[in-house]
Image 1 (cartoon, rainbow, N blue to C red):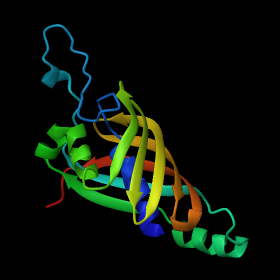
Image 2 (image 1 turned 90 degrees about the vertical axis):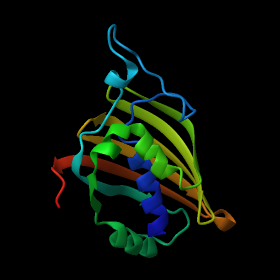
Image 3 (image 1 turned 135 degrees about the vertical axis):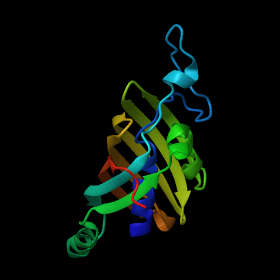
Image 4 (image 1 turned 180 degrees about the horizontal axis):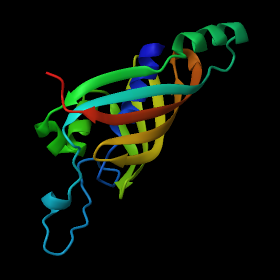
Length: 177
């Protein structure tokens, strides 16, 4: 179950700092200022060391006894934290770097709108026999993002799970060598 929640969280995180809009993730929408090329105004991250923290705010499985649900919440109560180095090449890819990582899973966007520092998306995934629908809303900048994500999962046999999370990504400095 933790793997599924981590997948939901990482899928949501991947949407955290996007500069494109539309349901087709390969179709960028850019607004170009006079005298500037699209490449000059395209969103990019700043290269460097990043930390992503995923905090589960709410976790519910209807029909599971309260005591068992509390044990699961306790096991997942600590935030998931990842640190990584974003190279200048990956940073320059902007949204495409995130989409490249997401393409490895079985996920598709129903909605994807990001522009001017805000993101709003809906993604559906099929993982480990579970169907996941994740809705994400938040803000982004070249050095980080703050996203709230709600996920509803349906497993084999109709078992349902609801998760609400906060995903924070922040640049912490230059890459550690």
